[in-house]
Structure formats: structure tokens, C-alpha cells
Picture 1 (tube, rainbow, N blue to C red):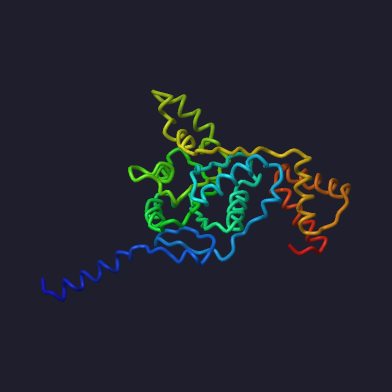
Picture 2: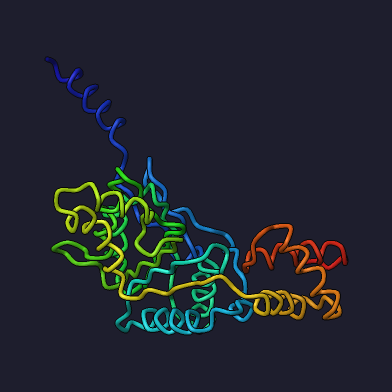
Length: 280
């Protein structure tokens, strides 16, 4: 084979192999989204979030998460966090709000969103973040859960345990889930009942949630909390409505939805603001 043919083969192989992923300019944005094929961190121009003061009925979880986040952003020891529980009660909103508080305090903390289906690539991302020196990164995976034959949970251990290298000191992981053990209860019971050794059948998956140092539970709100959420939105945006009208309309709204949560409270408020001509 002559030299020109070898050169053409080498050039073709180089085109097939993507260039190694290079870290972006982390000063370009407050948050990034991790993507694969090809690997990249896309900057987020403006993170959509609510002020932490508008998150009503989650005081204990709010204070615990905020303290943990600020400790980490200041270079102190902190835990990975699993925020689990009822839908629409502000789990992901609280993560983004806590990040905003850290930024307002003048702390250098970047929020990086990772999709569940991209967890197998997490090792490559950690290598980039490990090389970023003293800069701190908060990895965030929203609505995390695993199914029967799902092996993505094994990749998550790289973040929580870090293997022999250990998790980078400048990286922390927050996840939200509707499930405390990150898998459906009926699947847990089914595997336990059908396995030769029931205690070992689900131990590997269930123990994954134990690797989070902090568990923060979110429970359905009562009617008083539901109305307080809406009143808080009204006060924050200067929307005037009597208590009697708010109560009557909000209760009717939640009855038509068949549920009561922070998300439903916000959806009612958006409708109310639109009818009253208030810009959000």
C-alpha cells in the first residue's frame, strides 16, 4: 500500500472519530445543558426559575437544601441530594432557586442539567469538570427514575461514588423524583416475590437512593397552603383580588383539575393574571 493510500485512510479515520470534547467558557453563562453525540455543554442564556420566597409549604426542605448548596459553593463539605415526593410541589423549582441564592451571594456555582438517558456519558463529563480547578458545579437531573430492565442507574454510581477516583470535589449531584427509591413500588414487590433470594433481587437498585446523603420529601399540600401559594404570587406581582374571590375561584380551579399542588396553584395564577391584564 502506497503512502497516499495510507494518508487517505488516516484522514478518513480522523473524520469518523470526533475531536475530544473541550470545556466551554464557563463564564459565558450561569447554567449549561449536557448533550451527547457529540459531547458538548450548551450554555443557557437565562435559567427559568421562581424566587425562593415564592415557594410556600416546603420550609424545611428549602432551608436544608439552601444550607447544603451554600456550603458546597463555599468550598465546604456537602451532600448529594434526592428531592422526592408529590408531583408539582416545587422540587425542581427549589433546586434552581437555591442556585440563584448562591449566585446572589457572589459565589461561583454553575448549574449543569443532565438528562436521565445521558447518564451513561457522565464519566466523560466528570473528567472535564474535574479539570476545571476550584470552580464548583451542581449537576441536576430532573424526574429521575428507573424501570425494570434499565441499567442507567449503574452510570449514576459514577457521580455518587466516583469509583476508585472518587467523585470530583468540585461536583455535587441533585436529583428530583416522584419515587423515594427511584423505581416503582410494584416493581420492587414483584422482584421480591419472584426472586430466589428476594433480599438481593432489588438491593442494587434500591440501594442507589441510599447513596444520596440527603433525602428531602415533598408531600401534597392542604387547602390552606394552596391558597397561601396563590396569595404569595398575587402579592409578588401586584395583582389585587379579594380573599373571598381568590378562595372561590382557586377552589373551583383545583376541583376541575382534580388535584392540588404548587404547579396547579401557579397555573391558576397565570390564568388569573391573564384575565386581569397583569404581565408576568
